Length: 235
Image (cartoon, rainbow, N blue to C red; front, side, top):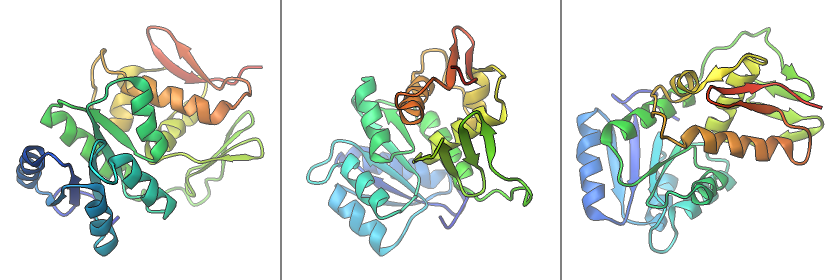
């Protein structure tokens, strides 16, 4: 990451639909972003390897190497550039596939430009280094350990690999362990934008965190129906 705001951040848009590429390029440039565009995953990887960017907007369905493939390659190379995945698939398993590949967020087509811009701003904020308390050590809730400075997580002796968004969501829950956080609060703190009661965005991330953290162990993240979520180890 080289830049933390839209006035200097560079975004790479990879989509095989020329109309979408060009409309996003214009819209993002108007918001102050420097924008590069490519038509497929092979070009996206070549572009990132030749000149790193601050944000990636990847379409899932592209010829050759698709968006999921691009994300997997970059994460395997330990490239942590924030990735927003665009997908025409709205089913939860398809969204989870994007997160599993290493994407930090996803947005279903068709989308509102304001929502895309809000998510890009949130990704930039979360990617920005935040000075921490040099005395702050690992936060612990039961057998869960979270190191805010190293951005590492353990469940017992097992280290858990999380994306930026997953880590930020878990850190918020850990710092408020035992407190029920409502949906609006979580959306505001993590995404900086309330996507409304119909959004499944938060539920997908919670289910994915549970899958990674619990792995057959007792549940950590509790659902308070009609309100939100809390971190409260059981058993």
